[in-house]
Image (tube, rainbow, N blue to C red; front, side):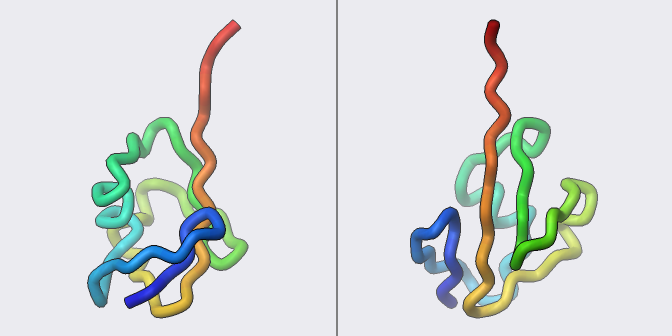
Length: 66
């Protein structure tokens, strides 16, 4: 199925969860914030959050430095 990740189309398997998407994108859950259809979803809920065709996901990565 097709979703949008940070404004770019992305094909993912049917029934894909946010946790599975994070794995596909090789994301570290402790270093990113995820918004699904304009709602922030906390990492503990990613496994229970199923994506649907047309879902819009925005991912922001935290970067440290000084």
